[in-house]
Amino acid sequence: MSKSDRIDFADLKSFLAIVRCRSFKLAAIELGQTPSAVSHAMRRLEDRLGAKLLNRSSRSVSTTAAGRDLAARLEDGFNQIGSALETFEAPGTARLGEIRLNVFADAAHLLVAPALPEFARMCPDVRLTVVVENRPIDIVAEGYDAGIRYGHYVPEDMVAVPLTGPQRWVMAASPDYLERHGSPRSLKDLSDHTCLQLLLGDNSSYRWEVNDGGEARRLRVPGLLTINDTATTISACKAGLGIAYVLEARVAEELARGELQTVLKKHAFDEDPFHIYYSSRRYKHPALMTLIDIVRRQQSLPKLVRGFSR
Image 1 (cartoon, rainbow, N blue to C red):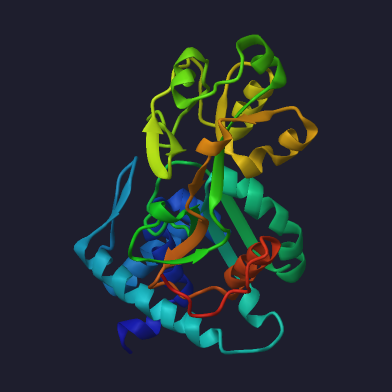
Image 2 (cartoon, helix red, strand yellow):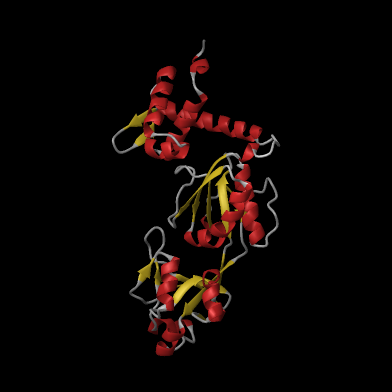
């Protein structure tokens, strides 16, 4: 009997989950098991292979040379298995499983949240995990199936699907603030105003990007209040604490109700569309394709053509 005849398929899945998550605890959460069960699966796999696959310490988990080679080969094999299973048309067969997404906060608010009710109805057996954060990450290394970012943030080796049209950034302020400080008439006037600073996911301060006569221009604006959350920025802006730089779609209701007003409208800036992206080596989960179609339909974009790539 060969070694492969004695190896449990589930143990191989546990091994890949640990490699993706770099943690027994996170792998256990992903698999819906206890850390103890995942640990036993790894010991069983290493015993049956007669090789050490992981280096373990109290703080980290890393692969040995043998582990890295096995993980790379297994990923290709599991991708082929996934692709083969996609061919089955039995109702619900290909929709079971889990999807893990890493999403910008603005995209979570504008795209994912509105799509959730219909997704839950169409894919009731899929476990969907949405992690909202603004820092740039490697979705494959951190164990995500897909991410949502602006187009220019998507790595070149990823398959990317646009979810929206261009996103318009505007400068906005409350009527109270404008009554007290006046409305800026030119970009130079911003130096005499209080501007709400935007903190990026890498903890750097964002320079406002504006349309200056058809050319993109980045401005460093004055202001003592720095926020990394759009909802909090909007609240501060409504409270009259300064001029905010936000996605127009995020303040559409506030603008319609007159709680906020755009300023320097001709300098509004059109940003790249939001894209969902995933590894070209990872098979396309049918439920992920369903989620993409829901979002695109809600954004009045055509249904996704299967096989799309950047």
